[in-house]
Length: 180
Image (cartoon, rainbow, N blue to C red; front, side):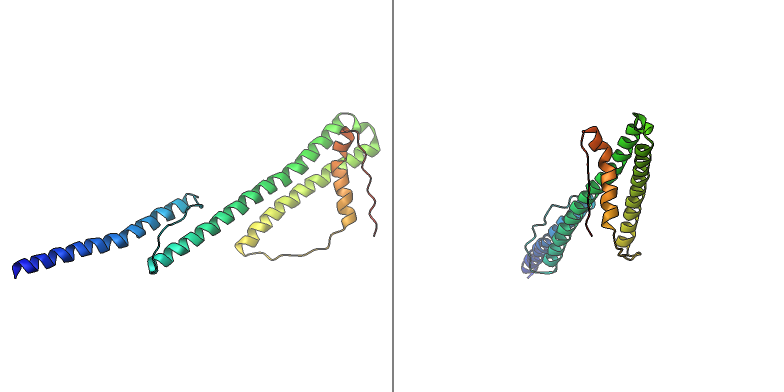
């Protein structure tokens, strides 16, 4: 009887160890996976093929990882776009001021137009910065979108004035004619 009891105890111990490993291994994998996600490693996948709650959790973590990867890609694209959008008016102001410094200031009409362009580009930068702040508030859920009509004639005129100094440097002339 004691031999059977010992054999039963050994079998139960081995079964318990095996069951504990079956449960602990996926949990450890998920812990390591979550740690990697926290470090920004979003393209990893959990390979846990189970039909129980641990399998459902692994599927959910994989889905979350995909969503985080997509958001990270969108964030990177947005930052690249925002950087470009901010560099453009800075570059336009620089070229405009260099043109004024280089002699364009001698012609009062050109000087006034270039100064207006510089002021508009600075206003544009301020608007872009405000848009970034508004976007942050939208994402935080504390701001509403305010739609506004846009005067295309003014927008095109502003664009032409913004690139005019570069066009002049390249020996080009820009004309715009907007029909209502």
